Length: 199
Length: 158
Image (cartoon, rainbow over all chains, first blue to last red; front, top):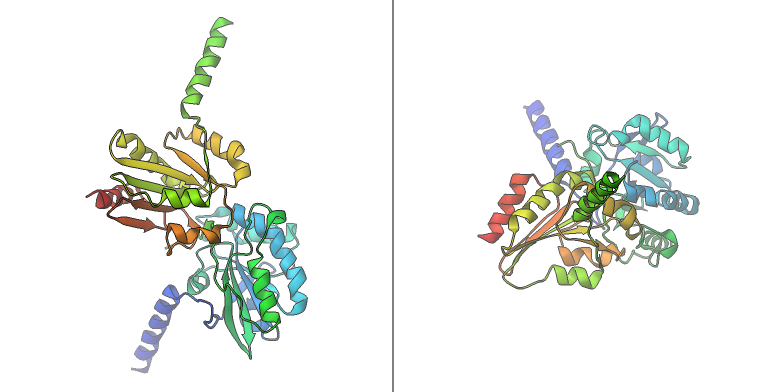
């Protein structure tokens, strides 16, 4: 009986995971994923930080490429202030061969990523967060040991040309958190590449 | 020599059949495009040359455009390639794929300011398709098969 309850519970959790989606104000979801250096990185590893800039991104998407240097710069600027970047590649590499673990390693090495680049092998994590495109940002705020989602969406308002940006949505959100405010807007949208899903 | 000239002009002419001038479209243009109220049914596909699922389905939209003839159905392909890729990527792509359906290219890169205008449920991932007339409206944020596209169009038409 206990076994049955447990397996039912596991099935229930699995279904919830599949359809879950986190919005600003919700608790962040724990993950443990393999990094390009072979280590396992979990959200709970960051419990001493003020927050985490969680970025769903990938190798081939032109928007991911356009934002790559800006994401590196965000880490350089904000890791020291308690908001490091954690990048997760959510794409199925059979559908998107440029996103194999080997190609992720090459990319991270070529560009000297100063942050982890994790593979969401089972694709459970991107689905749990409700990420739909690359790049898709979830800014997490550490509220007394519990990571909460503070901002979801775009990095800024000009993917093509960093020099033409007028609204830095993500940076404004981080600055708001650093001064004890809630980000406004807490949700923005952007065009991006659809996540390549097995199902 | 004359034959060569003839051949070259023939090839150029054939290429020009599918080369089209792509008008830019800004926020106001998008807003206008998706709110038409007349007796035509519009099929608006948001796509980009770099988006592999978009490239897979674009032929179905072209086919629909060719079949529509003079009927009250209009297919419009809205490209989200960066404006600086228009001549380098979009024009050659349309020629290669022999696309004759009208194409517009979005110049307003502040996507957050207009994505919700198209549909509040759109997260911004491509491809996405809006099918509507003055009575009915459906928005699909996914890749469509040929039969799915035709079914959805028929649903709106009937």
